[in-house]
Image 1 (cartoon, rainbow, N blue to C red):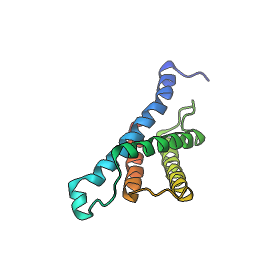
Image 2: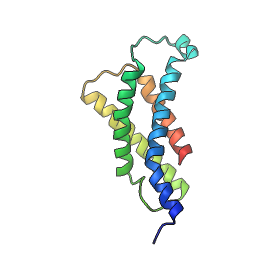
Image 3: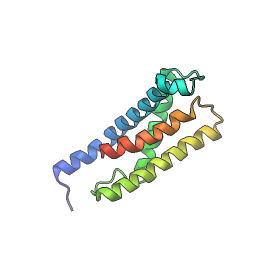
Length: 131
């Protein structure tokens, strides 16, 4: 079965759009953690400059795209929206598990668990909306 040009074009756009949605989710989580209302409830006691966070976010995006590719989210065959969203949720959960594993086994200390968890929630919402 051959794909229409529009379907092929949209499939081609998925990867860069996913990366943009992932970065938007990460930046939204970072901004939320530093928001004065949240900082008033739980003061920010970590030192995580945006430049360092963006480096982490870039590495996480690469891992995330690899997980999405492995989960078949960049396949050429269109799927019903419900199946696509279920696969997307499972892949984002797997991506988060991979990120937590890397942080745990590398003994790297990440300054804010809130940012990681909020980033995952934002990623689910942003990626679902984007697709």
